[in-house]
Length: 187
Image (cartoon, rainbow, N blue to C red; front, top):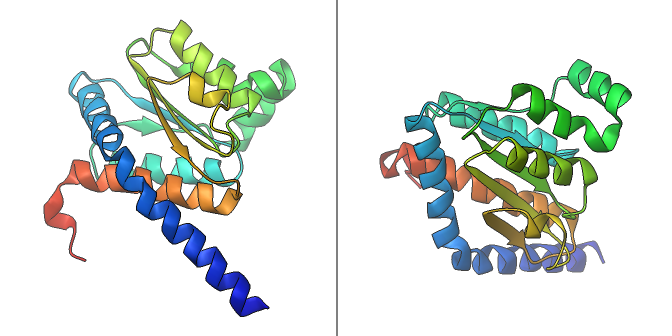
């Protein structure tokens, strides 16, 4: 039973990875957006919940340290709990964007379901602050609300949270490596 589960699990994930080739033009566009933001001395703000939040931290550090693109995330517990307490959980990302975002910045919102109200409100706040681009990463339903809010909407065609989070991480790390350049890719 375990063996069959894992075989199906890995096969489903492999199929999801193989379907990623269709979004290669979007990933190149994401790279161009991030590089342009950096050239224009703007920053990237990346947010998510749960595993997507951990991924946002990982990508933020890699973009900053390895790719030379200034990127921040809002994973400080004091910021989240203060803003959630004062403004409500659904509004905390929106308020963080209002306080820390600058015109022409780039916003990346990650939500596996594409329905996280705090991420949706963060996208809307980025629009209101006149960010240059909003990039979304989601999964599950094809017509999820987050997928309707971005300039680029990367969607994983899966209902499995772990598959969605893993493919999002692969896509974002591929963009980091694309920015750094092919010389570092030694597989």
